Length: 497
Image 1 (cartoon, one colour):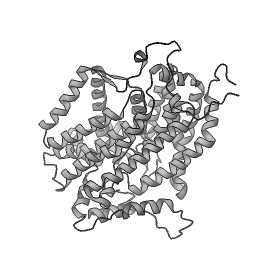
Image 2 (spheres, one colour):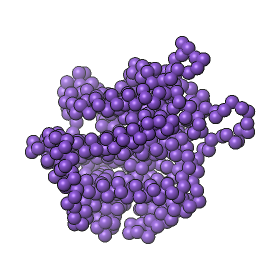
Image 3 (tube, helix red, strand yellow):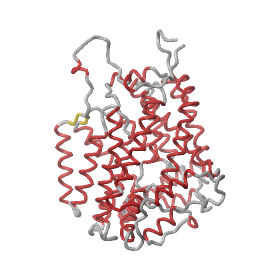
Image 4 (cartoon, rainbow, N blue to C red):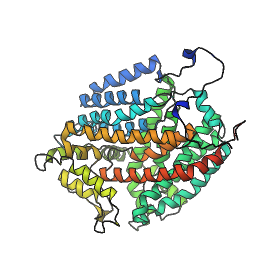
């Protein structure tokens, strides 16, 4: 009997375009994305121009390193999830420099160690993503026809049906996730199935050129419905769409570069407008309850967004620019940590990460006295800043790069970052090899799995806790859920029983 869920051998993942013996070099897939001359010139000019701006050296270093990371990391027709993760980390690094430039000050205007924090985090990206690059390079290089053959093994209608069910049900599941304490991480992991199916539907519809209008309609629906959320979930669909489209890139030309600049500019304007109105909007959304809930009707909420965004002044946009860059950047807490470690607080010598591991691997049932973790308290300790915490329904994490520094210093921090990258890379390889026999489905799996780990600001304990909970849940999916899902969505192959 034909078994559509047999574990895939990655050596067999590259599907030849036809069975005729032809010149091997003629069909060998490119190992690098092809960048035309005009695009290379634009990238070079953008890099060189960084020196012309204030604090240009730090801009140049950050931009130069992200060029190196992405050029090596993103390979033709391979998953784009870690390219997105790298880009988001980069934005949280360079935003600190942009913030200084926006007010016309030196990079160290808020801390004398912001320059060191910027350089250290930029270099840290190389160590974090090197193991991931190794596993990315182990994947077989695909042709577009080879990837299409995996799409043709799946029914577009059935993939859409699965996504539609997930779209209609997960919003309520996400709303109750934080009401169940120790099961929160597991529930969040189940919500990731919707985004897995979103990616899969996108891959299949684009590669097979079926239901593409419906797919983009649901992109719009996800975007609009995301505004009816206290936590600005409208951004999530944009993130996953970027991952999907990057995964299908083979060639970069000038038209794509210019289009990317235009789209990026438009998204930046939307982000600035949202920054300026989100406090008023959230106050309206919770209807004065001062809780992180959506109490207003969806129609009223959307009308309120329209009214607020229609009344944006130049002064409010300038204020929003500072607020947005300050919220986006995540080198300030790191710089304040360098001020106090080791001059006030000695290096932890690995104890900090050992405490993280012990906390997330010890069930509360075995340790009834296990305290509730408050990331803000650790941040206050190592930065010396006065920060609001749980009493004001807010949380400030130190960021896992800073936690690596606390243990081992500026150069020693690169080793735990490498280990985190190795942890990601091994898991990435495992999921691509074992999630199913359909490589395209596995692309969607890794996209859904790793999206949560896109931010530099993520607390080390939260990172480990979410990673372990998600890994356990996805292994369960692979053993129990994915086989049934693939069996339902697969089109039986001729001659196989």
